[in-house]
Length: 227
Image 1: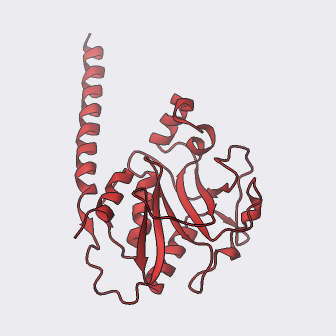
Image 2: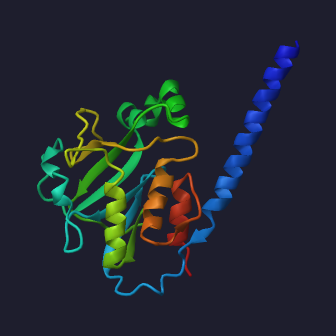
């Protein structure tokens, strides 16, 4: 009986900790950092933040005078053999979740458990786009050349590399005709999600971002809210 009480007590403590953590994380998502962009001049380059309702991608030009992703990425490796890409989006996350959960109904308990506790590897989901159109779920952000280069270098450093080349994941679990997956660094977990990563990408360029977030809504809140 004493053992059972201890187990119940530990479970209640764990649940209580999780609830408090989620409340604090939610609050932190609404605290802005780098809100004042007035010190940055010549913010005439565009990137986008894109959400599917859960997950945030960072979208940048496939190539321009400031940074050329053609040195590392080849859109012809996609199932559709894409050749007209003008934009490329990056989404970091749990490899098992990406490759084994095409839809929410396919989510397995083992995949969710491994993702939550950092027990699996991570992957970078790369998608190519011909054009970007601003909507409530796809918001344009302006930045200057220096900020943009810092942002791109931060993204690149999250890829695994062998012989200065990105490591493509051979899979037939693509989300469409214009996307691929690459091996990535880091561990997805309860304290560091795909949206935490995307928020940190924005921070790397001193762009407006959340103090901390687990969800896409925190990031988009700061860009949808008018000054």
